Amino acid sequence: MNYRNLEIMKIVGVLLVSIALCGCSANRVSLTDQGLVSVEKQDSEKVKILWTDVYEQDGQKWIYGVLKQHGISTSSIKTHVDIQVLNPDGSIQNETITDDLFVPRNRIGKGPDWKKFRVQLPEELPEDSQIKMTVHSGSHKKTDIKS
Image (cartoon, rainbow, N blue to C red; front, side, top):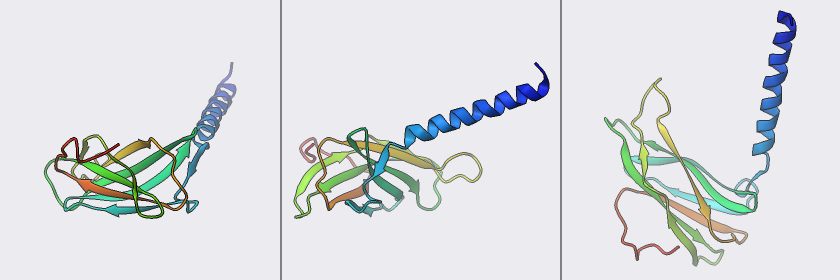
C-alpha cells in the first residue's frame, strides 16, 4: 500500500467518525429554543450560571448548564444548583438539587475554568413551564426539597 492510499484511508476514516458523532447528537431537541420552556437564572455572589438549556433526548427531559466563578479566587468553590420547575399557573411542579459541583478557579490558558452540570427531570413538562435555577453553596435539610 503506498503513502497516498494510506492518507486517503485516514481522511475517509476521520470523516466517517465525524459523521457518526454528528448523528448521535442530532436527536436532541431544545425546548428553550422552541419557546416551550423558559429559564430564569440566579447567580450567587461567587458563582454565575453562564448558560443553560432544557432539552428532550430519547423521550427524557434534561436540564443542562455551565457554571463559572466570578472574580479572582485561589481555589475551586463547592456549590450546587437548586432547580424549581413551575407550572404555567406558577405552582411548583418539581424541585431538585444537583450533586455537589466543584467550580474551578479562573485560569488563563490552563484548561477549562467552568463546570458543566446535567439533571434529568422525572416528570413531563407542560408547555409554557418556567424553570428557576439558583446557585447555592449551603446545605439543605432533607425536608427542604421535594422530588
